[in-house]
Image (cartoon, rainbow, N blue to C red; front, side):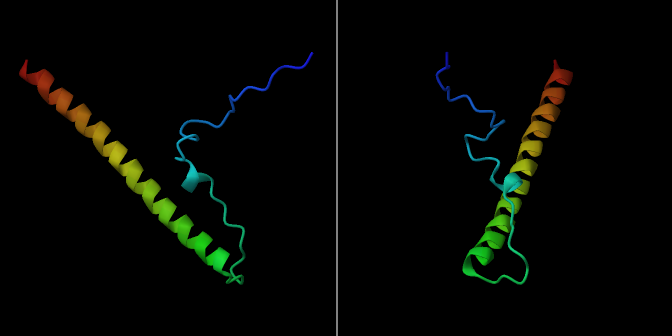
Length: 77
């Protein structure tokens, strides 16, 4: 007997939110190809990498600031 198809795919963390765009984007255009699609693909890839780096840095900053602020509070009490 066949099972009913479920919607639980193994997409990984953040795949439903579109967070993996920069990490999984693959540019398959050779350098000689100068079509509009390839130019846009390269520009979008650079923008997504920059955005991913800023998100990563901001997450690290928030985590470190929470860590150091909690250590400062624990010394006072």
